[in-house]
Image 1 (cartoon, rainbow, N blue to C red):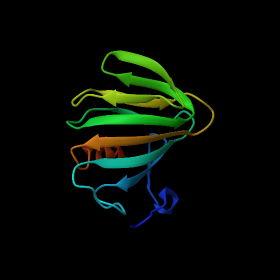
Image 2 (image 1 turned 30 degrees about the horizontal axis):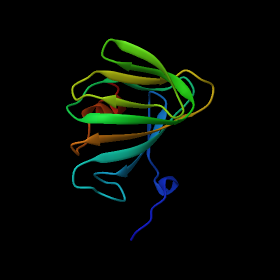
Image 3 (image 1 turned 60 degrees about the vertical axis):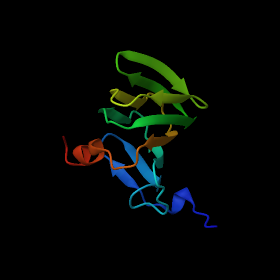
Image 4 (image 1 turned 90 degrees about the vertical axis):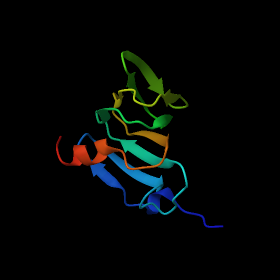
Length: 123
């Protein structure tokens, strides 16, 4: 058994205002066979910008609140909420509060989603 700690992962700061730590996946301390999982701190007024990918995904809100957008729907979200996102759905999560929003994500099948690199390149 190997125990890891989320806070030992440096993570990546994204221009849209968040720090993402990939816990399970390519380049992470653990690599699963079929999924990717991560921990995200979305800074006040930051977001996971609008994007889509072929993986199905779940966001779990652990702390804070904000707005979740999936396709043409928008809903307020808070700690304890989790959102299932069908594959190929456009989605965006924004922190509308003055504190960090903490969320976990898990998607399958495993891979690196393109929107991460696109955001880092300013696209």
